[in-house]
Length: 113
Image (cartoon, rainbow, N blue to C red; front, side):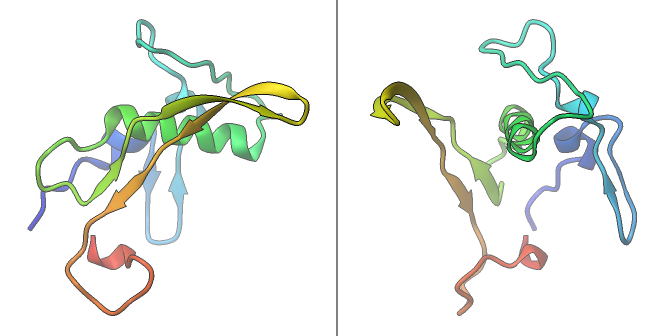
């Protein structure tokens, strides 16, 4: 059986869950002081969906389970510079690995992690 990291290790000290809800505090998505490299996320009523999702992914990336039996891994971002929409943009690509016992499902099953 793989090790199971603490819920608050991934989602923050203010994170809670019950049978029907997960509550993650936006303040727990802020990069800690001294984090290198760092990122900006300022909790606000106006935070967009993609902005909040990226802050969530960045938190997961820095706090993920690094043990050899981890079943859910987000790999570090790779960068490239590309010309898109008539301007230069930096493209960040990451990969998610999910390891499960063999099954015939075409999607990973959350109940098997």
